[in-house]
Image (cartoon, rainbow, N blue to C red; front, side, top):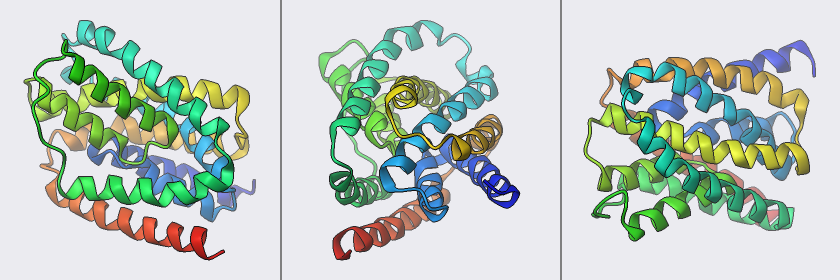
Length: 246
């Protein structure tokens, strides 16, 4: 890749890392950017997932105050999200790329709509079977595509756990990162990863993931969420037009 493309992906990754940790929409920023750089949809998706691993690392480091004392909870729930991430990655790898091109706009559109009206409901506790099923299902989505998957995971966690929004957001970042890490490992071994794009994007994700929690501590996030929802819907319409008219 030329120097301009490397710097562009680094900047995209940094911005997307911040967006990921604040409003859980990294892929809505980074996935279209990879398409704009000329990557095919499936390659863009797996490359994005591999690079996203570094958002989780940066967010975990930047959220240390909010994660204090949550280690046992991360261990209890992390294995479930890792299993879901592995399942989503497997489904993506065995799904024909043409099918993915048609599914992606619907996934992005649904995720964006959920930002406007997040799901509600009580799942009782982190030990209940309903909660574990919901968390597993969200982790599958994170491993498969993941656009706004953090919003879904935050909704599940908020319905079953007490705690400040900053603490729940930090837990969401770690659990999403664990699901993504397993999917990224599978894609790195078996998927069509474009490493020339993945490396600068990952470095940007690391920086943005570290810086994002500093913003999340200070901003209510409502206006950002609505703006992200509008952008996500615009992306969904654009990708849907390309997929169904080509």
